[in-house]
Length: 278
Image 1 (cartoon, rainbow, N blue to C red):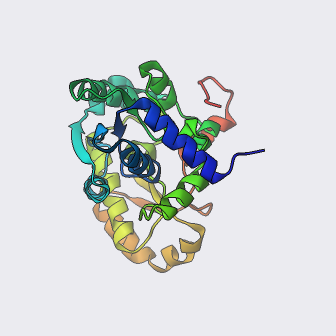
Image 2: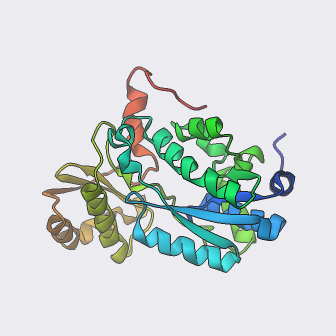
């Protein structure tokens, strides 16, 4: 029998209490916001949030992370990371997230040591185990703890707990770094990341939520929710005009709609030559 949500919540609180003090890798997304909230509730000033700021992180998300940390009442640090200095990250092979998390943890552990914090924690959760998540390998190597995962919390659980705790992120669309908009094997650079960020700002300004702009060179492939497909067609002229200005020659609408992690789909269609988590 699966444990109920109250049992999982109690388990999460106990995991954090046993850690005694934590530095939370905080992106401002649904998962890390719940983790930060509960960690602060349990540990008080022995919990500190740290957000990595880099070209891969949208400007608006950094502003949102600052707002959320302030609302929770936790001390919030912004740590500069430079993933683009790592040639293996830039190459954008299927293990890209491993190199991203390695860079992140390399920066966070000295901060935790300086502040006398016992552990670094991040927002991996139970649903992550069913997809290609090489970042977990970096977390294992660095002995980073995953309290949400240890408590068995799924994305649905996390949203419901967030709602109960009055976190306005409870229904926030899933978020991933800007590099996830690039097909594997397509080298990443700062200019393309800015182009994607600006393109997604266009859709956000037009009222879309739960979407991605996938970058395929001159082509912008738009993934929007199924409910927004018709609206995207109705606003196609405005969308195409603004994305053309940003440098996209072609703008396409993906009829399958938004799928988190859709760039992993080709990996499932080829012989497995990479490490899959699960």
